[in-house]
Length: 342
Image (cartoon, rainbow, N blue to C red):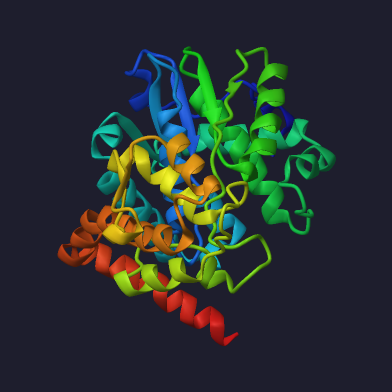
């Protein structure tokens, strides 16, 4: 070993992504949620909302952090469970919004890293030289504390990911959930320090689609899941918080609003003696009717359950016909059962 064998590396060293270099237009990168034991339907809808919010003329990119998820120990750090989650997420996105997803370039973090591992890990190391522990701590989601080295490594990998997305010479916008906001800011500061064009931070207004107020009810019953059966959806929606004329906090109403871009209309079946059926094509009218009492929770809830089950028809068909998706579902279910026993 000799000192002169050490070759200084530039902080501008980064992973090159040929698939993005060929795009030529500004990039709008949406970071998918980190894996969990269930693919929540609210997460699928949130990703679709973020992708739809891309400015005109931008190429949509969906970034899947499979290696960062393993680093953080998501779903036990099991590679197969991580891939299973993302495969199911992609199936949900493509089933619910096929035309939109045709315009989306899906990038798996792991496959991208393997296109240039030396450059990627060099960029991670360089980021570590410039980012302090306080910088990493400040990048964590509100309420999350810095407890392990895995969080530091994952944060530096995020910087490397954004650096790779920003290295193609075209403007880049970043969009993600609350867990990514601080990480995006960390990456932007690092990139600015490198003298490169700073990515734009894009915030999409996304509804919190839970069936109960935070902290209320069992977690399994407060979220609709992509793999829920008809009976599961009916049971969960029936238990949802839905106070008559309270349009300020009404989870079924929020879900009906989220469905409109996909279904085009929302139909409420009612008996003739109760005024007959109602049909909505805009949320404002539905909200006004609920607030005035014209639309009652007893009619809204069954209509929502019917609409969600109808929207999931294509998703369920794919789950039944694809052996790979069946296996992915079984992997996550097995992990969930194993976790409950601990």
